[in-house]
Image 1 (cartoon, helix red, strand yellow):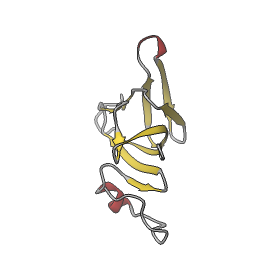
Image 2 (tube, helix red, strand yellow):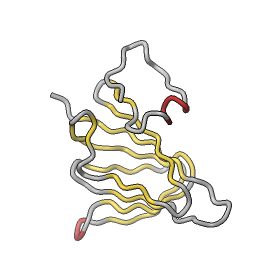
Image 3 (cartoon, helix red, strand yellow):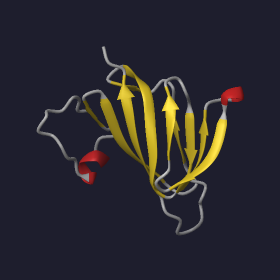
Length: 121
């Protein structure tokens, strides 16, 4: 993964971002684009690290589609549906599962943009 890119790196194409599974990190902010096919899930684990550092917080926005989201576990679990333009946060140590429950034939994939603040020294 490329880290702390130079100040001349101000824009990134869709293709460039798709080829970097862990996203791009600039000045302590990590950005990712995640694609979730119909009837599939994506899990954000509390143990996910970027450059061996924890996330402080992640902000997620639905770029296209509708998701069912579960944040936390057990007594701290919260479930909700969210659509295009909606966003939610994942705090440090929280598990989050997102599900594109629309598994109908011809259903669209869901696209989620994620910005994570990486712990800084």
